[in-house]
Image 1 (cartoon, rainbow, N blue to C red):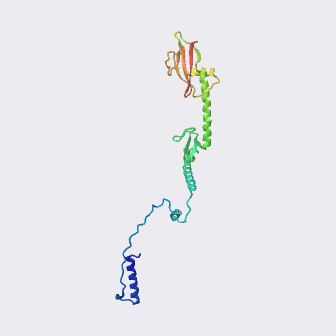
Image 2 (image 1 turned 120 degrees about the vertical axis):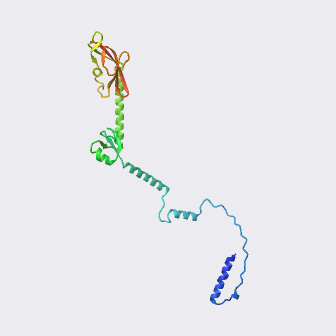
Image 3 (image 1 turned 45 degrees about the horizontal axis):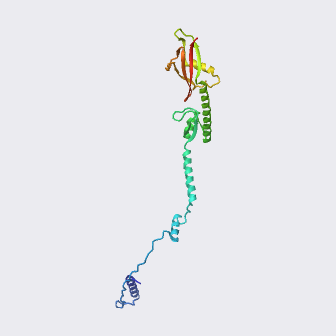
Length: 255
């Protein structure tokens, strides 16, 4: 049903048309009639559907694709792209440093045998030129580590075997002494170790780490830096490795 506004506009349109054609006079106006507004009808609306209709889906797809300017990646393609980006990022970080094995001690860098990461320029300009380091791969590092582990295990077994041979071994030494038992010339750690090497010629007693670290008298007192100057029974503590020690008895008699 037309509203009052529509009716008024229609009457004005007729009046204007009449004036232009000279066919109408002020007295020829058609009186307006007013129509009462219609009673509004209440339309029961339903709740909007959670699933968008086809037109809404089409609009969303158009926005995603930039109205046909590009094709969006599938979920699988997006995952592959993310993985490639991560790999590229990690690769660029690795390229900033190179892995080298130290051949000489370099202060602030490492000692002989260390595997360290350094800048390429530092390696080329200093370490390589001075012969202080060489480049190594991960495979070479793993191989060297395996060799070191095997060598360490072998050394440990040799040390344990030597400990078993030395423990409770008695070394007898004789030297001229006076009536009171005072020796004419002292017996030091160097002499004891030399005699011990003669007793065990086939053992690795020539290693630099093997040494006598203490001498103890019969009363249990530590001689410290002093040598044996009296006849009697003593005990020598021998370091085979950093955590493997052996004890031998040293009996000094008068010649």
